[in-house]
Length: 98
Image (cartoon, rainbow, N blue to C red):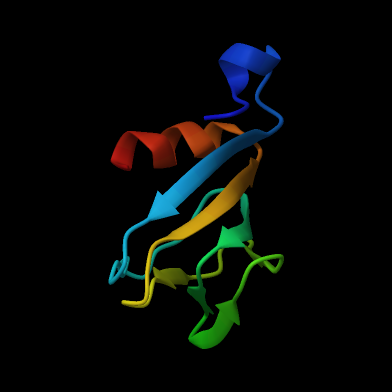
């Protein structure tokens, strides 16, 4: 985590740098907060409510509750992104699973 409740002193937002492995595919899921991905390198297929978006470096994808989301990384290489959650407590829940 780059920024979380411990560092900020409150839970309005959390920010993490994430690297997802080639071939990774999460199950469809929901978040209890706004989740924003800013792709730094690689490509991410960001599927929101069944609609697919291909995110490349410099692109942003987001999902709001109660949207359903699935993240997929192609076999061409890892994907690195900044992940932002508002409110920030959601970031701690995500970090526990990764």
